[in-house]
Image (cartoon, rainbow, N blue to C red; front, top):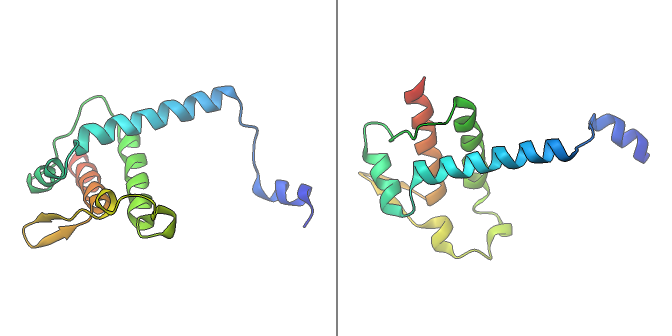
Length: 121
């Protein structure tokens, strides 16, 4: 396959400065939402999971929650990948216990966002 054939099959469009600004803004919103929803410690994650529904920060729309869910799902699935072997195991695999359930850090984050979306529907 020639380079031109590959490019045309991908249906890519130019990515300019405005698209970069929008992508950065969306990434910042997701990070801000994540910090607000997850807190800073495993105890914060556990508290959110023990609640009847997560504490929902204001100022975010459903698209923000869906994008964060996608990120959490990707990182939860990829956390066992050799690509992340350089990270301290405590970042990826600190167990979070909620009753009889056991979550890794990223599984807990995913579950919190999933529950927030379910509650907001």
